[in-house]
Amino acid sequence: MPELPEVETVKRVLEKKYINRIIIKIDILYPKMIKTNLDEFVNTLTGAKIISIGRKGKYLFINFSNQYSIISHLRMEGKYIQKNIDEENTPYSRVVFYLDNGIKICYDDSRCFGIMYLEKTSEIFLNKEIKKLGPEPFDITDPNYLYNHFHCSKNEIKACLLNQSIMCGLGNIYCDEVLFKAKINPYKKGKDITLKECNDILKYSIETLNQAIRLGGSTVSSYHPEKGVDGRFQNELLVYGKVNHHCPKCNSILRKDRLKGRGTTYCPKCQNVAISVGLTGKIATGKSLVLKILMNYGAKVFSCDDEVNKLYQEIDFQKKIINLFGEAVLNDNLKISKAYIRNIVDNNIVLKKKLESLIHPIIKERILNFLQKNKNEKLLVVEVPLLFEARLSSIFDYIIGVTCSLSGQISHLKQRKCSNIEQSLQINQTSKFDQYANKCDFLINNDGTYKELEEQVNNIYQKIINS
Ligand SMILES: [Zn+2]
Image 1 (cartoon, rainbow, N blue to C red):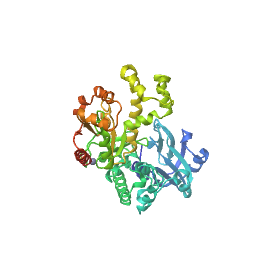
Image 2 (tube, protein in one colour):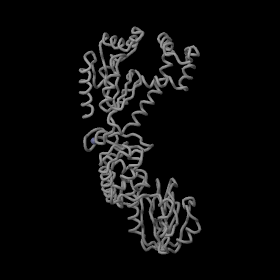
Image 3 (cartoon, rainbow, N blue to C red):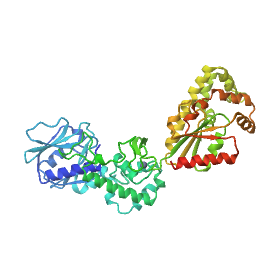
Image 4 (cartoon, protein in one colour):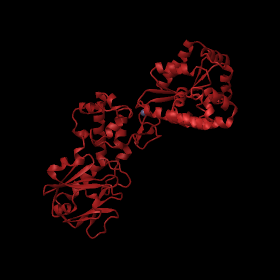
């Protein structure tokens, strides 16, 4: 899709070739493209002379001597192609303008998303589409303008930049480039953006757009304003379209995620996007304690055990459990009895698998949601007892395993006043932690004192944060 620099390139080509040309005839081959009265469009412009070409954001203004203008938006695929009058139209010609010098301009649009309006030149800026546009970066002199607008937004900064009513001119490509240059996390909320960051956004927006305009934009294969005018800016792109490439600044691997539906490429390190950590280990090894310590260091945390407990409180889930185990699963207070479920699944592998296939996808989805929603944080830690069994290892940047001796596990269970230690320890037998321990990036041993535990956690925390 053409963005501001591509449209500016089109404007310059039209300016160079068609100023002072008179339209002698217009064929409208796809009437829906014209958003104002068709007859008026044709009658007003036939015989009119093109005197200047203007632009705001991605809208082109073709201004005529009779004080009327065409407002044209190319959308996905629109382009102006020149032909001699006796040549055939292009295959997707939608509107054809015949000029007084033996040539015609075919407005070509394979997808028909483009639009044109006829407006009085003096009323262009009253047009409902144009009215919605905020100033272009070139026209903003004070970064406080951006600060004041971003400051009242709960949206991510990238969404704020895509919102053309605040500032117009940055589409998906240039947003990613500008945020990378300004070292801003695209998921950071508008309200948390500082004045210095607004200043950087403005500076890099102007710099990037100017550079792109100088190089004729970033050509998409279907888009050619003129033979020989290829968008060479695509060779200068730093992050857009470069997922899994190395960051040009720090050599980290660039990532791509979706943000409000838009593909967003960034460097997790340069742009401080949250680091995600999976925390795992057998029962009663001290995972929750490690989670608490990391939380005190400022990590945002998610505990799967807590989430499963929450899940059991949800009516929809309770219905599914009753479907699976029958009414007998309810205790005297008509609440789901987890002890009953545990007893059954311990002896019934089929039901155990069914229960897992009910719980695991829901929890996995909630973990992914948690990670996605909090990319503006520094560190995210998810406690997942069955991290390897549930095949979740690939969603985390780092995995920490917590280990301790059997006697340590028993003493932790005693401290928790566990009523059936033997049964709880049976989970050890099904845990595949030992088998996968070598896949952990860090291992913590929790057989020592609290102070020793905290020291290990602190060490790992420093390594992760400074990685
Ligand atoms: Zn980087």
